[in-house]
Image (cartoon, rainbow, N blue to C red; front, top):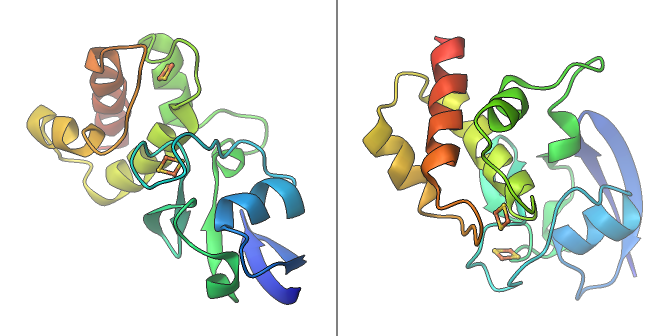
Length: 154
Ligand code: FES
Ligand code: FES
């Protein structure tokens, strides 16, 4: 076991992990943040996307021991003071989810994107969402939701 300290959604966690544990394992099993879903566990689907020091990352591809001192943002950190993040509201309003399994990954990817590129056009949003897989929605409504949240932020 290795002991490491992480900040998750602004809260410090000191956890013990095995060398084989991924960031997703650490978040789910050691930090109690089960909102980060695992799909392929091979870096393909994006369901496990979180932000590591502000940048999107596949939590299934990083070993937890690599992340000493890092700041992680997960889907649990989006809502503030009981109020949903604008992306969460937009996903609801535009019916951008069905089963919802992929949704935390899309939300974290989109949170990074609209904070960095609030002026992005639909083409850029389509390129963004191509990195994550959704088996249910067909993507149109996900693009609409991200568009709406970015517009609100401008
Ligand atoms: S579970 Fe990490 S990319 Fe699919
Ligand atoms: S809403 Fe079901 S996989 Fe995306």
